[in-house]
Image (cartoon, rainbow, N blue to C red; front, side):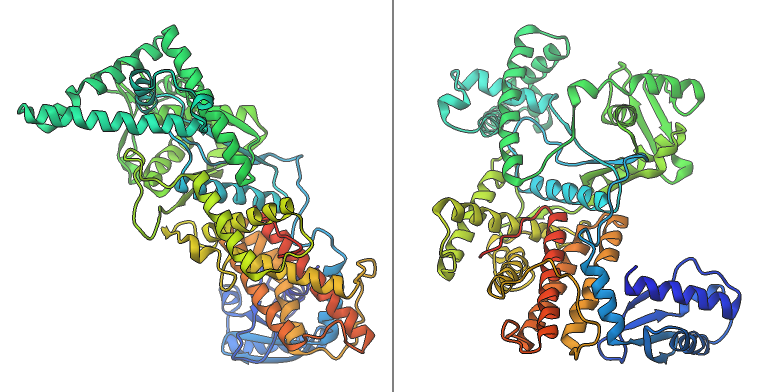
Length: 594
C-alpha cells in the first residue's frame, strides 16, 4: 500500500470515528507548490455526507491524523483543503515498499473474468497506411496496453475494410493501366502499388467528368455517367455475385496490401490478437435485424427498408437495412459486435475511430442496448481528432497523404542526424546504431501522438517531435539512458533494494519520491479515461523532476555518506524502472545508451 493509499485509508477510518460516516473514496493530491505540505486532502467532497464548516471538519480530521498516524508531522487547513506534511521516515518507508515491487504501478492480468476488446487501425485495402492511421494505431494499441496494466484481459483487434466501391476503383485502374505489374516487378510494397492505382483511378475519372462537363452535362450527372465509375460499379456487382475472375483479382491485390500492412505494423511495433474482414462480416447483422423486427425494436417502411426510431432518445431515425435487403454499415457493426462477444471472452469493446463517426457510435451503442445486450453498457468510442501537418490537410484520393512508412523513415533519419551530432554512441556497432535511430525516431513519433488528449485535433511537426529538449519522446528516452550511465559508473547492484529510513533528505529527494508514488493512480486514471496522454505527461513531469534532482545532487557517485549514496542510486534505479514501464504502456522502447 503506497503512502497516498495509507493516507486515504486512515482518513476514511477517522471520518467514520468522528462523524459516523463511511466514505467510499477520499480525494488526495500533491499539495500546491505555493503552499506548505506534501499531500492535500479535499474536504469539500465530504460535505455531501458531513454537514458543517469545511475548515473545521478539515482541522478535526487533520488533528486526528497527526495524533494517530506516524506518517503526519504537521497540518495546515486552508478553507476546505487539508494540507499534510509527512515525515521523512514515512517517505523512506514507502519508497522501500515501492522498490520491492518489480511490477510497480501495474496489476497482473486476471483472465478468469471477461475482458475488453480494443479495435484500432481498421484500414481500407485500396491504399497504404498513412499518418492519420498512425495516430489511430498508436492510440488504440497504447490504450489496450494500459487496460492490461490494470489487470484487464484485453483482445486487440481490427476490422479490415476489404470490399466496396473504393476497392474496385483500385482493381479497375490496375486492370486498365497496370500492364500486369506486381509489387515484385515494380520493387515496391504491395499496399503502395495498390494505392497508386487508387490515385490513378481518380485522375482518369476527373478527366472523364471534365470532358462530360464540356459537353454540357450537369456536374452531378457527369459524376454519375463517367465511364470509369460505371465500370467500377459493375465490377462491385460482379464481386457480390461471386464472379470468378473478379474475386481472383480481388484476392490477389488484397494479398499484396496485407503483406504491406504487416510490414508497417512490424515497423511500428504493434500487434493484433484477432482480425475481422468486412467481406466476412457485412451480412452478419441481417439475422439480428430480423429478430429485432419481431420484437419491435425495428420497423419496416413501405418501400421495404428497415429502420429504428431513436427520436425519443434525442437522436433521429436510422436505416439498418436497405429496401433491396442489402446491408448498411450499421447492419455490419451490429452483427460484428455480437460475433466478437461470441468469439472471445469479452463483455465490452473500445472502438478507436475518428470523431467524424461520433454520431454513428451513439446510434450503434443505443441499438445494442435496445436489443437487450447487457454488455452494451461497456461499449466505448475512443474518439480522436484529426491530424494535420504544418502544411495543412491530407487527401488520399489526390495522393497528398503522408505515407506511414515514409514518416517512420523520416523520423529515423532525423534521429540519426541528431544522434550523430551529439556523438555519444561510442562502442556501438553500425547495426546497433541503426536500431537505436529507429527506436528514437519511433519514440518521438509515438510520444508526440500520445501526449495530446485524444479528443483534440493536432498538427504533427516531425522536427519538433525529435527535439531532445521539451515534452518529447527523446527527452524521456534520454533520461532513462542517463540514469543507466549513472548506475553503470557507480557499479550499482540491484540486489540490495532497501534504503535506510533515517537519512538527511532534501526537498528534491522527496519531490521525486512523490511523483513515483503517483504512478499507480496515473495508470489507473489513464485506463478509466482511455487516455494514454495521462501516462505520457506523467512521464514528462517525472523526468523534469528527476533532472532537477540530479542538478542539485550531481555527484551521486562521489557521495561520502554510504547510506545516502545508496538511497540516491536506488532513487535513480526506480525512476528508470518507472520510466521504462510507462514508456512500455505507450508502446515506446527506452535505450540504455543515447
